[in-house]
Image (cartoon, rainbow, N blue to C red; front, top):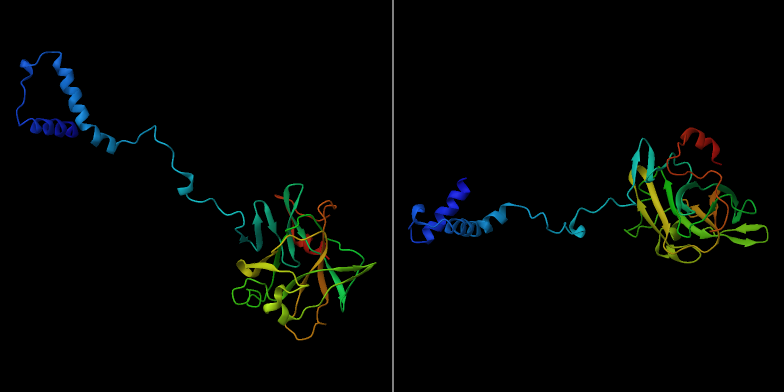
Length: 262
């Protein structure tokens, strides 16, 4: 009511302070005067009232959605995707894509003697050419990357050479993994990200071609004979599924999983 009074008073002031007596107005002029007063007040009314026909906010200015690659640790388990959690860090795990769905696969290890890997084939089949590895280490300072390059010191990704039934892999030195030659063949270039509570996220910079590979822990030693195992896997988009893959929402008992992984 005060807003309307102020509006009408303002119109009267603009007319030189003269108010027309209602009794001298013809009946047909009254609606016109009221309409004119309303027009004069519209700017202030528009400033106070939202336009129901206005366009919705631009999505680009809204708060961004949560990143798909954001990770958290809950009750000691690493959450890597909706419904997918890593129950333990005993072995490296891989976020793989099978038939369009993301699954977690533990990477089994094989013994290595010099450069010769035990067995005629890997026990871990993967399908994605760009697998994402998750590795847990108790030595957090050693695995946080070197000079901001994001390369995990102490881990190397290499192709496995097949010669009949013999599998071999190059044994790089720690200085080679931790130095400028980290991407020099045969070591494959990787990107690494330090996650919470000692976890590392490792992925190849370029897609992997079909074949066998090894994720190799490299000790901080001048000798290359200290490694006892390698974590080997096969990249084959049309290959079989891993027998122990973990699907989204699967209730995985970490104690049983520790016993099953070899």
